[in-house]
Image: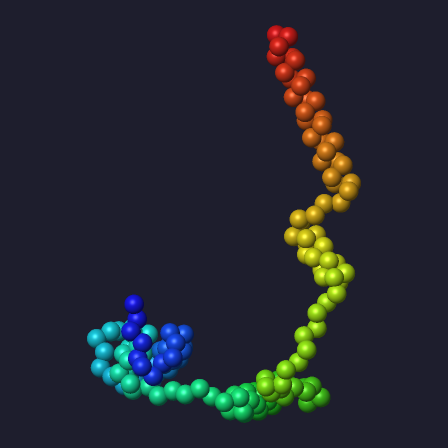
Length: 154
């Protein structure tokens, strides 16, 4: 069982911090502690367990600012590469603190979508296919009966 350092409130947060530190090590960062391990994930665990990695939970405003900076960087890269049409707009990142009402499709739309997916996956058959399959099954049963009677006659 993993012994959590006292500054972590949950195993999940600990795993996230260790995995992000491992990603830094994989991308070329130097481990901050001496480790007997070769794998970057275990080196990262040693760094976190040794208290050499500082972390904090970002506020909503910091997250929104970070996302907006990423959009601006993407815009600059697209403009520099000349890949973006000047008329085409790249939408700004909306703040995640604003809650939007989810659009829920009505039952008829949901049923139509389900039927379309079932047809696409070959999970449904038309009425003609069902009758044809039933007719084939009856004919097959009749063929077996004839074969049984033929063997009994011999």
